[in-house]
Length: 294
Figure 1 (cartoon, rainbow, N blue to C red):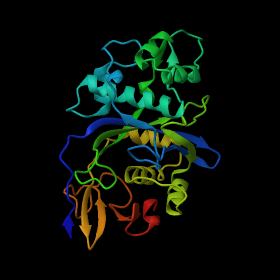
Figure 2 (tube, helix red, strand yellow):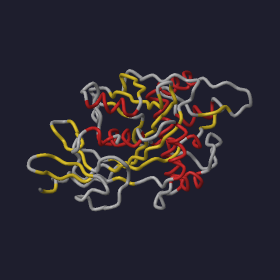
Figure 3 (cartoon, rainbow, N blue to C red):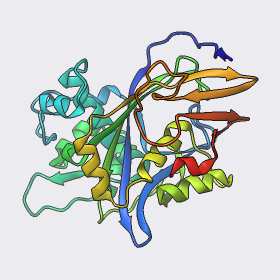
């Protein structure tokens, strides 16, 4: 057994992901989008909406388009080292990416009784208008309260699927019931609502492709029966920070997580298996797929 060769030590880029959930007849479902196969990162994989922080995500303190000040968002995020301005930018990025990639807008009109046309806002955003200017022009307020921190994933120093590193905050949120999610046909090319276990079974059977953070997040979500359960769990926990560590065992790449005997952090950060084995470009639990939901 030997440690995997680390990539050049570039600081990970701040990014945000939003895990959108809904209750359906067969149980709680999660939204997954298939990234364009030509994408430089995660091409062809099913992911949650999200992306790196953009300069337009940094809004001035006191902007009426936010429902909470930066200090409150930093407190909710629970990262002592993250200043209010960057905490607010992470929430804004998650909400912007949801609108860009799947057309869902978690916002409310400032004027009582006014309507909300998510499609019109998305069209103008895709047309090149800035997100902050759009929110102001259309008299909206973003619903950061709808987002609850779930986890923080940092790309390992020896990444298995990409050369770039990200420091990604995962948020969970209930999808707006009166809006329809749809991929943008540019960055994303398919929309899938599925129960977490069903998505993992589709991955097992080769019907879809997933990356390790999505596999492990789905395994965590599969232990909850409803959106309310997930949101309650998120409200009561401190979001775990997950920095996977990789090593090679007899020619097999192994990705291990906090709580594993080969990981520097011996305290578990999440339920499910503590390691995944890489075979080809796919990842498998060491003890079989049942370990993802048992």
